[in-house]
Length: 222
Image 1 (cartoon, one colour):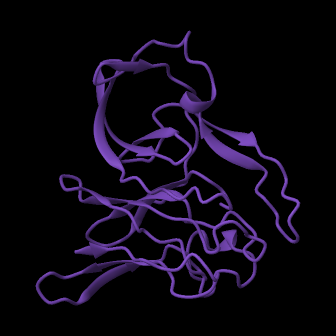
Image 2 (tube, rainbow, N blue to C red):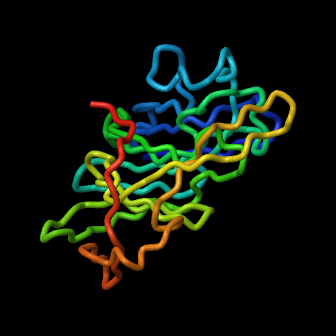
């Protein structure tokens, strides 16, 4: 059994939102995934100073999705506490507001994609990741689809985390709040940001079509 958690949205410090797996036979803890990386773990450097310590939020409060055939679990992770201010947690703040793929048996991260860097907008991923299959250029691709509060749709190769279509980042306004340092760019899927009228080419998904964009790098681990 794999469990998320319900933690506070304020104040900033409190219980952390780690994801845990339990044996259904013994009830013993099998593994723990630190949604806020601890010292020495990948992503820890995205938290300035000691801002990671006892950082609440960054939890999975919505449904997780399991790919039984491939032994993977997909997590839509929430933003850090507090929701609308990040002056006490400068940096990208991984793995907040991210889609994370884990090995369901070990809890080892396979890949991640952060949809909002340094989230101060309450743009956590609340919808469950959806497992679909895309046919593109005669090839079937196992895909995970993630919708967002902004009305964007992200499509990733389930195995690698590579975006199926283009993902771009756009500049965002700088905050005028004391000590706040907003991230310079915000992730946006081209389907939600630009016209696709002249790009209806080779993507089919249950009868719907949209055009391809350039591939973009994604955070991943071996």
